[in-house]
Every structure is written in C-alpha cells, then in structure tokens.
Image (cartoon, rainbow, N blue to C red):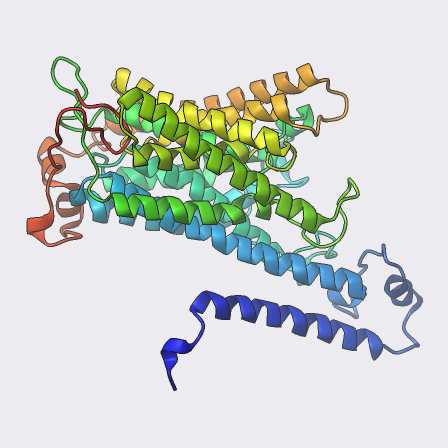
Length: 507
C-alpha cells in the first residue's frame, strides 16, 4: 500500500468526528423507534414534546428522558465544542512559535518549557479550584463577587438533567483552554530574564485565582454581568487580563541587559527566527476560529433572537476574519509610514491586534464595524509598541500592546459599535458600562500581579543574575540548548535604520 496517498491526519480526525455524530444520531433514532408503547406517562410526554426537558428517575439514567431532538442537539453541540476546545488548545503552539521567533535563540528551551507548563499547571489548577470559582452557580462565598472553590468536573450522568445542551467535560476543556491562553500571554512579555520557578508561581496564581475570579464577574453571572457588561469571547476577560499581567511583570523585572543604552536610547534586540514568528501567528489565527465562533457554545437549533445558531456561529467567523485582515493592513501602512520600510513583524502583530479587538464584539458588530474594530486595533498596536519603547518598558513580543491595549479597545468598541444594547441601557449607558467594567478587570489583573511580582522580587526570586541572563536561560536555567551551541548567539547586528522584531526603530 502507498501510505503517502492516504489523507492527512486532520482529515481522519474530522471524518471520525462526523462518523461518531452519525452513529450517535442513528443509535438515538433506533432507540426511539424501539421504545415500548407502555412507557410511563412522564417519559411518553417528554418524547412527544419538542420543548421537553429531562426529568431522570432513580430507575433510568438522565439520557432516557431526552427526546430525539434534544439528544441530537446535545451530540452536535458537544462534538463541535470539543473540536473548538482543541483549536484553542492548539493556540498554545502558536504562542510558543511566536515567542520563540521573537526572542534570542539562547532562550528557546525556556520559552517552550513555560508554554508547556502554562497549559499543564493551568489544567490542574483550573480543575481543582478555578473552574468552580469561575462558574459557581449558587455555590458562592460572596454572591456576585466570589465563588466557592470545589474540585473536579461533574459528570453529565450525575447531573439532575442535561438541559445545558452540551457535555460538562467539553465545557471544561473549552474553558480551561481560555485560562491557559490568559496565562501564556505573559510569557512573551517577561522573556529572557525571569526565573523559571518564579514563572511557575505566577502561572499557578493566575490560572487558579486571578483569572477565574474576574471571569466570574462576567461569564459566571457576577456583578459586572448584572450591570450589562458584554464581552462575548474575552477581549477583556482573557486578553486584557493577560496583557496587563504581562505589563506588571515587565515593569517589575526591568529591561533585558543591553535593551537600552546608559543615556536611554533604544537598542534593538531582534529575535532569531521570523519564520517561527510568522508560523505562530498563522496558527493563532486558525485557533481563533475555536476561540470566537466556539464561544457561541450551542450550534444546533434556534437562538433566543430567532436566528439559527449555526448562522450566528459562521457570522462570528466572518467578522473575526475581517478584523484580523484589517488589523494587518493598517498596521503595515502605519509602520511603513513611520519607519520608511514595510515591517512584516508589525503586520503580524496587526493580525493579532485585530483578532483581540474583535473578540469581545464579534457576535454583534456589523461587517463595517468589524473593519473599524480591526483597523483601529492595527494602528493602536504600532503606537503602543512605540509608546513602550519611549517609556523604556521592555516587552520583547509586544504582548501588552496586542493583548492589553487592544483588549481594552475591544471592550470599549463593543459599547461604541455593538448592536445588542442590553435592556435598560441607552447607547451612552452601554458605553459607560463597557468602559467601567473594562477598567475594573484591568485594574484587578494589573494590581494583583504587580503585588505578586514585586513580592517575588523582594525575596530575590524574580530575575536571574546578569551572568545567567547573558549566557541564556536555556543553559543557565535548564542546562541545555535548543540548537547546536555554535548557532546560539546573543543577537545579531543590524544596519542603521533597521527595526527589531517588535517594530521599534533602532537608535
């Protein structure tokens, strides 16, 4: 057999998912057709009513009370949410490649290791503490502000019904991928000089406490949600939290050795592999189709506004694509006009800026609105990178301009351009709620992380020694190189007028 002619692995995975869906649906149909006429009145009523909810009894599992329509919707929603969770998890690879490419070769192992631990520690802490803190239901310590931590995920069969329309396990996988995303944003902002142990402490605190608590305020039905705050997929709840945490880390750490001269001039420190950086951005763009469309959560049936959920999901993908493209083009134009040459890294950051900006409002802006959101984000990221350079804040990958500043813009843009104004609010009131809520979440992330980072600094556990930084974190922290030793260089020289990989003009 010629194995090379077989379809690639993703095709097999997709085919398997579709096959499982068809098998599940066929099985459900067969079960209904063979149902005994002498079923109880309760079960018969459920089977003949399109709007029935499950009422499991001690004699039968919860699934037995589902109609064919409900079971089909449950299967479709669960499988699609699982695939979206995998796409969001795949974004970890994108972040890893982007951060590796934007930094010196001598820190490659350290960056990859941090991305692995962001996900691994994030899963465990979110499982044991964070998931319940973020989605406590009625199980709260301070209603609207703080949930009660409990561990592990409730199995669907142990729930009182299946009215959530999708599996609790798929829901956890989707939500924990978001938590890991918020944590890994910081990795790029603190690259090249932070102790590995300190980073592990930060990652555990963010995914276990800081992110879930502020996430509850919106997505868990907390006080910001009660005010009318809208953030569909997390411009503020996820990206601004990560961006402002990264800013706190960059401030507490200080700049990398040699990043600024003694008289304060900027000295570019280019990354070692633009190909990796570009690949990372393309992976992140693809992953965003799990991030934004996946946040619709239910994909079968009809939404509350009368539209098909499938139509809403694909419209979200459309606005997401428009904003990413507009961000790339505008960032290229603005950087070209400032630096006199087109800078691919600015366009790459422009893609991410557009994606971050549209994440809060992708479900409710028009197509023209998506162009505006993405275009403004593309310009904002260029000016944000230049601003950090002027303030002498060293952010090697532009994490704060992309995720912090554009996350704030996404929250505000929702009030300015969003069409789903909450009941009881005027347009002005909607804008005010968006601005206030965004400021509260950003202040929470920045304040708590600043305390943590300066606390670690006070005990001498934040930054590596100058000797270890000069040698590279790969060898000093982990005792290995990612490449042959003769290929690992501190950085490479550039001619006057060249730019670093974050678009900062050289001195």
